[in-house]
Length: 197
Image 1 (tube, rainbow, N blue to C red):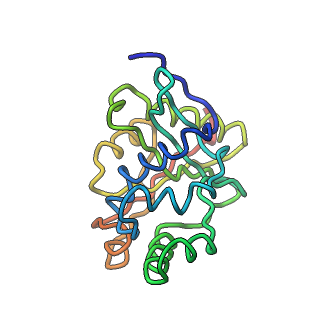
Image 2: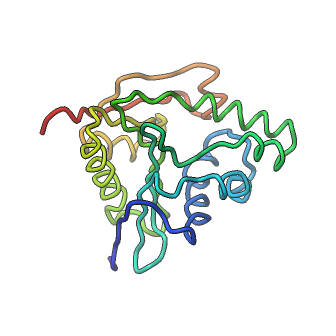
């Protein structure tokens, strides 16, 4: 399997790699208005909080990332100035609308897993599970009561992983706006209570 390392945060040299994996895992599926990974990199490269995530490497090569939101911490910090100066107004408005449709507020006692993405060449090595365990340990250390995440219906592998880790579906969104923003028939909110163990 190689030497797998999971660390809190991400080295600056891996940010572009992480955004490319994020594009492949999510932005291609969701109708966010990004044409390719370079669009995602152009928008977020200078706006990410490199401490609001966990990253994985295998033998020093970027392998995966888990980003989170909790309190004021958030990996993606959307800058409207960056959005409207780096893209045409029409594309900027489409991206903004879709990003807003897919986001929701965070409660004070909640730790939200925003994204879990593993480079295809490193899938099947348990990296996603290891990243989730690190995030849960952090959430517990922060005295959070709930971990939550969103997942589309079509992502059966991720749903199985989250269920195996103790997550349950607490809400499902369907309808025109969900299809417009996510390209999916439904988006599920899954939660895990961190109350007592």
